Length: 377
Image 1: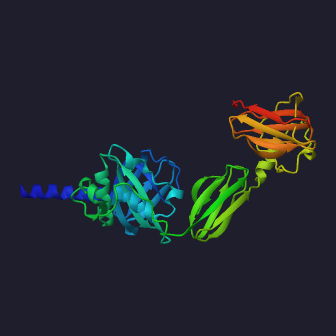
Image 2: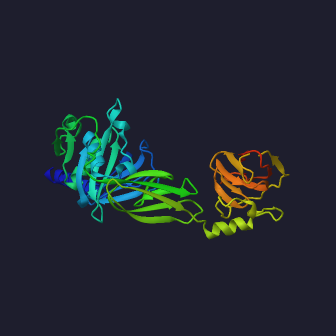
Image 3: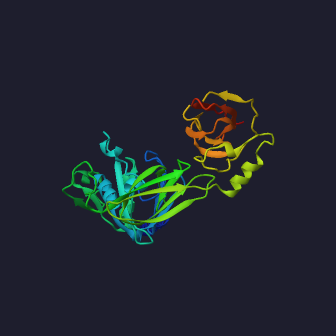
């Protein structure tokens, strides 16, 4: 009998060791903020967290993945303390991935878990996760076991942490999170604009929004990168001083392959006179075209000055690329000044048929054009 009992216990130990080696995997996890550059919705549960004795792997729904060696983890936290520690430690948290405060004021308790760690370059990083009511205890246990780190927790949150998990109770913090002191780290302001507008802006490889964007950046050296589909990437290294303000304007150039594709798609009977366009417009080659429909000239009454006519072009949906006489003038709604006479106005948008009008401008009035785009087959 003793022999069978020993064999049974040995089998259980083997299963436990195999399971531990393979790690614990959790499918229902939210990423609520930190230093991982991701556009994933903080309310989305469809992320995967895997914890082994050697590495913590977080795979987000948008394809972003990060591996954190357990030996590099410098701290664990739960609840209000998780928000405070990640938000305070990561000076860029508000820009890189905003710490989602919506959970702290929710009527139902939400279970936030913070992981502080150093990356391969020795930079301090942080991740704020949310587990659900059925798995957050197991996540805390797995993290504490694999890293050997105690879980920092506010006094009022201690009762929600499993008793077998070693904790460090933090006293003296309010229930609601407060922003880090303004004197903690000097910072400056960076204003980023792009031409064409609406390009994606990245700060030190982290997506921070679309241009125009105003960023609060810690003092020191940083890299600003601006990207837009169909255009060459723009980047610049800057040094920020405390309380300084820097304005950057990224003038993007079209890629050569986009230019060639646009030239090949022109209709041979399309009459375009680029010399009629004002010097105030930016001369570029139009984006990818589909076959255009030739339309009869349309007379638009036009007023601003005897020399140039102010033309406003809108589109439904908004954001289409607008060209006047082969010159890119911006994304709709766009405004351009043109000389009186005939001009070819075209609007392009991916997934929609091209829109074009041959218009005659009168020097006595402003002109307004509205392009209703039809979805392509």
